[in-house]
Image 1 (cartoon, rainbow over the protein chains, first blue to last red):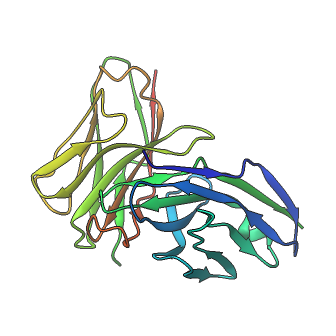
Image 2 (image 1 turned 135 degrees about the vertical axis):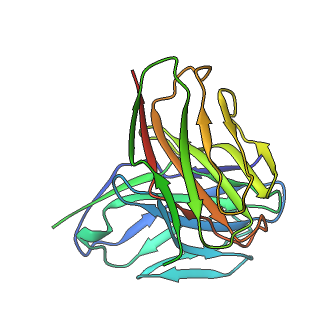
Length: 111
Length: 114
């Protein structure tokens, strides 16, 4: 079956540090890939997505590139802020109509 | 504003009682989903529906039931058969079941059963 493996957390960074959260996947079909963010006590929000190989998704300074050869979709941001503290989920979706989520990575940014 | 609403935000029930969680969307989306989230874990799919009057079991459907009588509504009933019902429940929708479409999530309902 499909699966998503995320870098284990928690991750703690100082403000303005560089962020990488690793995500790799296995899928039976050709998936689209997503990063969602969840703030405490809330639902998930889409952060960015990529629907085909070599696509780069970007939003609010975050970026991720769909790498089919390494089955990866790592999330990066050049300079994190305290407001980026949240839980980040990598997910894939195939034409079966269901999404598969990673376990989430908790990011804490300290001033 | 278009979006997904879930009510209530917090719900408390005694063991042995059935409870229904509400999920409504005004995005005109065809597909709707229910997930369960436990502390420190990812999302597990309970049920999903790709069209009105049709739904499928997800990975952890035992002890849960759903209905999809209207496009905008997808209520989830947690029955007394669910052995460990205390969790955070998230409802989501997407335009349809196609692979390129992201999911939109509601704010969640935190259910506590004692």
